[in-house]
Image (tube, rainbow, N blue to C red):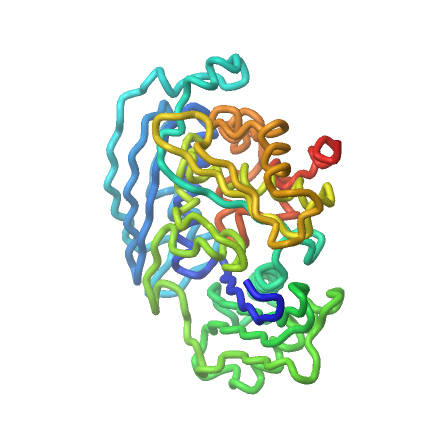
Length: 396
């Protein structure tokens, strides 16, 4: 990446069809783990006008109704139109129940290091974690601001600040960088859906969103829109209803939004709909944890951690650190620090982050809350991989 550049990142609200699929998939994961922490569950969802399709494979002692889980999510998100709602939309399911396998029904809290080493990753994947000094969350600024705008759009709809809004909205923020540091807001784009195509008029919608959303979000931000910032609100005109009435959704289609807004790499594998024994999900959390602690320890201003796993091994085959020229010590030494102070084995990640038990411990579920507004960089959920509790160890 160059020193001087412009980068844009997109976020969407929970009413976006792809995000709605992610939430349903993770609500299913929550439901199984709340009852049986040793559940194995993979759930994928697709939806369109008046129909939801869920495919799930599981091995669990939990009781469930996938249809009921999906309808509860749709109701909470707020879809009530004739074309798509929690009551009348059809929910089709394809499920496959697998036998309970004692190999996976282990209590990771009681395992010895030798026993942890005997549990392989089970999937072949390269995961990435990233952190940088662009805001308090140590996240890239474009995705951080895009998420803030999307959250405010959801709040404006649900709390009737702008009562004419529908659940779906999309935001996009472009940031100009100078010497790899955020310099100014290049552009802001917001697309909002509305219940009535005739009202409000487009001019009123744009004025309302400027005041209630953009001005509200940037009120306390150190970098704010200036006179050259391009602001586009519904640039293609009225967006009537939005959501599944207009376009379809699929689990796992918004991985850049889930991670770093394409400022840094991500594996491309879906994060939602997978239980914690899937290394392609939890490895991304472990890599973020490592990168964030390196930056918090002031060993680099930017840091990307790469973990490469094979199916048959517990340890990652490769641990790599890239600091983009900002490292205070050689990257080989940073890699050695991670290998000395972090345990990247699958069962150790599950143990250290309590990933099988958090759904029962957190009121209102856990994974479903990750499905929208980012699975990393969250300051609102007290996520174990967002802690910087190993920064002092890394400083030595």
